[in-house]
Structure formats: structure tokens, C-alpha cells
Amino acid sequence: MGLREKAGNFLSHLKSQYQIAGENGYRYLEMELAHLLSIYNPKGDLYAARRDVLAKQLGIISISECVERQEPWMHALKSIVANGQYGQN
Image (cartoon, rainbow, N blue to C red):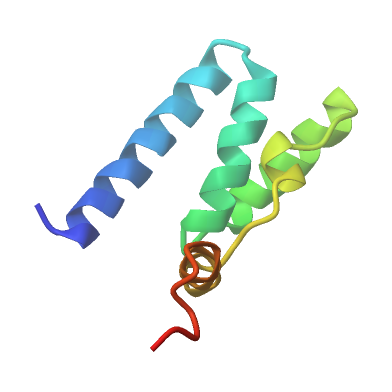
């Protein structure tokens, strides 16, 4: 299974859980999943709008908004520096 297929499966799973949460009244979980879908889905505008509505209704922000997102290259660079491998010949 390739990376694109795994990513597609992950998005499908997030969408499914988002729908289930909404159908069953789990508004906080629906909001969190909407936030993730708005980030990782190319057509995430509808999810972002739903997240905003839920956040306003609940009076909270998504916990995933509180966590600093880090680009993969920055994460790799920090790992190299932390392991003392940078600048050694």
C-alpha cells in the first residue's frame, strides 16, 4: 500500500468518524474532526466552516489548534541537531 493510498484511507476514516460523531450528537468530537479534515482535506472549507460554528456554540477552540504544527523538514532538522549529528565530520 502506497503513501497516497494510506493517506486516502486515513481521510476516509476521518470523514466516517466525523459523520458518526455528528449523527450521534458528539459535538466536541465533531468539531475536532472537522478541524483535522479542514487541514488535511483539499476541499476543507466546509469543514472549517462547521468547526467555526461548533466552536462558537460550544464556546471553545479545537485542542488541535493549541498544538503547534511543524513542517516535516523542521522536525527532521530538530532531530538531527538533538542527536548531535549536525556539524560533525
